[in-house]
Image 1 (cartoon, rainbow, N blue to C red):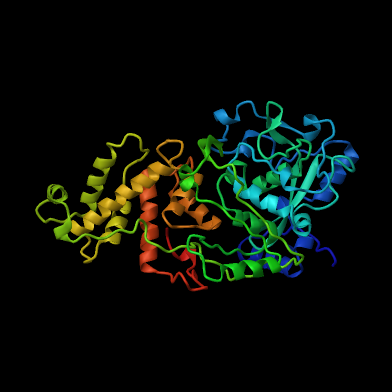
Image 2 (image 1 turned 180 degrees about the vertical axis):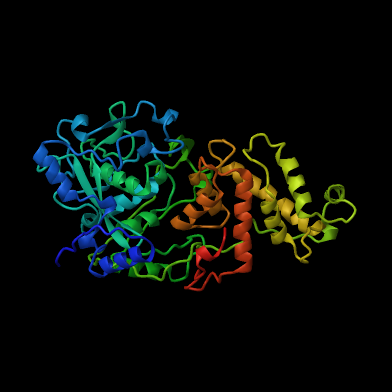
Length: 481
């Protein structure tokens, strides 16, 4: 196939979209003709370095603090003190890109919570055909070495050719993140760097699911099963997937780890519980075809948050009734503004929580969720249900606030939402962080509550049949969350 000429066209809006569609129709974005990420041409950059006798330095993803992270790995963080960016040629006398073929032992986790990504990378090593779609042939630290490498990653419907230099973050002369068991093989560390570049920084890789990595390394689609409630034909589903050469992965619920034999240690840059067993596996076959399934909904579960019995007025505790009388006033109902006053008075007593207080908008959302008779106020039973919900929200917030900062990071938020029954895809999770996080990307308790209330409202108003194979046709952009 003839190469599509890349001609700079300066346009925006509809014109830009038309240009992209034309280029795609000519084959741009397919694996054999991947889009040059950030306009960087690997061959041209390498040849220029070879001619000048210099090693490549990537100004688009520089060996600098900004490439490490923004919060826990951000500039000035104690976790990034002493970090030095070094090339493999500075770390060992004879660095190798791949030694005797790629194997799972080439991937050892470092001080970053991206085990989900490493499980996907390890799975690639068991299928050489798929591996070399992601890790192109012909790269080494000997022949035509210029300090530049490239990898191909699937993003938003097209293959990207991602260029990186070989500066890697180190501490005390050892790689900080992914490394090989031997310490002389660097393809996995460089692939992790390319993935971090596409996502903005290394810290952005902390927290995720193996299925995301599978999608980005294959261009395929995934289906998720809860093995606590497996379909009756699960064995047949797995057999068919294996016959088609699909990638298979599994994961554990981290919230259940304390029930089992685990060791305390640093996991993803935090003190926590870490299981010594891996979580990613691949069972390949000769076929290159991925398991073709209909696109899943943003959530793969649809169950209420903390299902509980709604008490009748006669079943509610007398002490709570007395409290309600004091809070509600003569009309025996709580308005939106009264709810705001009550919640902010209560939350101010919890000094361990970071919060600016509940906004009137947040309180209105809560009233709308609980209000059964449509009068815009909460009666005794309705307020009792909301009160118990907020107590449960607080319990979950504290459980998954792993560093006890009083707020939630994106990684903690993902775990909390999954524990609540909302398994979000990557894009929707990013939208939620954008919508509810503060400028430092931390989520306060009031925003956490507001997010869960909105999600629960969406599920109540637009229920999805869990057994419907086309479950999830609702477009996320049509719901303001």
